[in-house]
Length: 224
Image 1 (cartoon, helix red, strand yellow):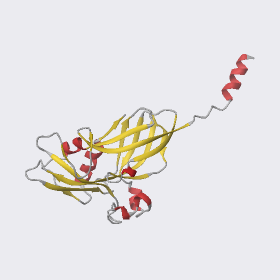
Image 2 (tube, rainbow, N blue to C red):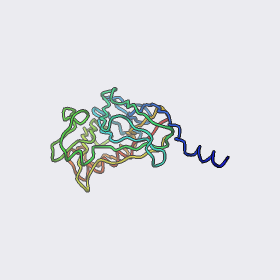
Image 3 (cartoon, rainbow, N blue to C red):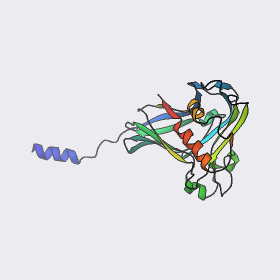
Image 4 (tube, rainbow, N blue to C red):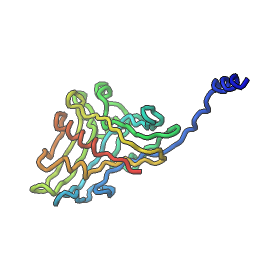
């Protein structure tokens, strides 16, 4: 009788996990301090300082993971983060149970690029689209840098979806279960790799844009 009871109980449907809600907040920092546009910040590398006038980038396919299992995600697939628009920085998400990692893509995937411009976050009115041949600009980082031989402007328009120089890169970071996740673009780390001897202007797809995308992807950190 008892073994039969255990078998019967094992066949009962598992109690569904309740949904939990949280917010992912994106931001940029310099030496741990939140960056404001049009404000000069020391990078911590000699006399080097930078001021950002534009910081915009696409975040696509955010998922929260328990191991390899997807347990949470936001409602939107394509999200345009714009440091000048505080409403774009906070992304609500829903999840079940627990998670130990977050994964997202910096940039727009090749299939979406090849299908032409879209609406919403992907609307060309947002100033993040070149042409149907070149596709979306995955990130724009613009400003002034003083640590080089002379103060100079930099214009990094990072995009391109053709191999081997595609710039949509998957980023994975460990994070603990929480209703608040802070994803920070560490500009100190970014400018430690994007040095003064590199081009100050990159505005077309290619190897230089691919390298900048890799540096940017590597500069995301999780603060909880």
